[in-house]
Amino acid sequence: MYNIHTLNKISNKGLQELGEAYQVIDTLEGADAILVRSAKMHDMVLPESVLAIARAGAGVNNIPIDTYAEKGIVVFNTPGANANAVKELVLCGLLLASRKVVEGINWSKTLKEDVAKAVEKGKSAFAGQEILGKKLGVIGLGAIGVMVANAAQALGMEVIGYDPYISVDAAWGLSRDIKHATTLEEVYSQSDYITVHVPLLDSTKHMFNKEAFAKMKTGVKLLNFSRDTLVENNDLKVALDEGKVATYVTDFPVEEVLGHDQIITIPHLGASTEESEENCAVMAVKEIKDYLEQGNITHSVNYPECQMIWNGCARIAIAHKNIPAILGKITAVIADAGMNIQDMTNRSRGDYAYTLIDVAEDASEKVLEAISAIENVIKVRYLTK
Image 1 (cartoon, helix red, strand yellow):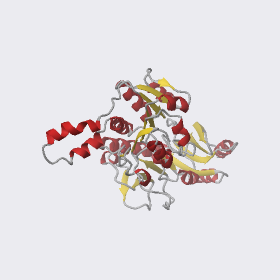
Image 2 (cartoon, one colour; image 1 turned 90 degrees about the vertical axis):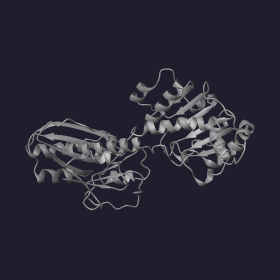
Image 3 (cartoon, one colour; image 1 turned 45 degrees about the vertical axis):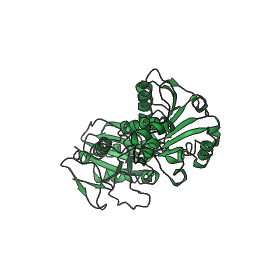
Image 4 (cartoon, one colour; image 1 turned 90 degrees about the horizontal axis):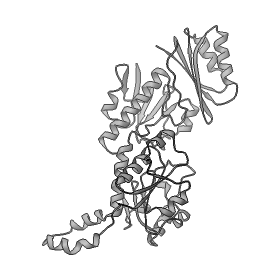
């Protein structure tokens, strides 16, 4: 029986995927895995029993992934599970940036009498623009960026996409009519609208600053549904006041941007749909189950992707540092015990690596202890069918 602890409310549709071999427990003590959404885990002390954490969502800023990698705790996320929900809100943001819908709604609420006459007289103050034929720059062509680019192109926009690290799968999903930019400057100089879909890294923090704004078309409309600190807010307000940026739409209200007439703040609703929460929960649970039962890793943020079809009596799953000669030491222990390796795979990611070894016979506790004792081996798990 596997014990699962939830740090936030997780969709029942996801929990139903657990099956009879699992139980959801109320405390961290004794948990084999944790399901989490937005709960902050940086100051949390986890018991030794925890093997994996799955974030029902894409962002993992609330999880100390490097600390957990050192302990052999695999952290998963669910990329793409909420992509459609975010895409739809980005499209909404495009329209909100173009048509003064929010301002018009707020004004309409103030009307008291002779409403029809007042509407006809006052509506000209809320005239906007159409997005048809306008140029949209999409920075970041992951699951969400590709969906946004394709949808905007279908609505009649000219789309320029930029992503120097685009995956093969994303490239296959991108419409052939979307122009590929080779530099950010190309996107900045041509786009009437810019939407950003990149992770928050040291290299992307405050990527939208005074230098970037200076390269953009005057009157550009900027959309940020990724992370608030991608934008340097003080530089943004200057660009808005000077007319360089016409409108900023963000899903991340923070003190610095609240109350500005040209900023539309949405209370982090990108993934807040019933369907999105269900999709994320189902994917997170499936990742946890595959890891606990098979040792396979899919969509981890701190360990490499590593899957292998079961081909033996038992499986040894080993998290270790990515250093030379360690595989030879591991296989030497198995060979010295007179065991036959049926199949093996090894994958690395930065400082860490992960190895799956299928063996033809049961491994003794002595063998497992000998592997665990190898320098730079972090965690050893033994799985049987």
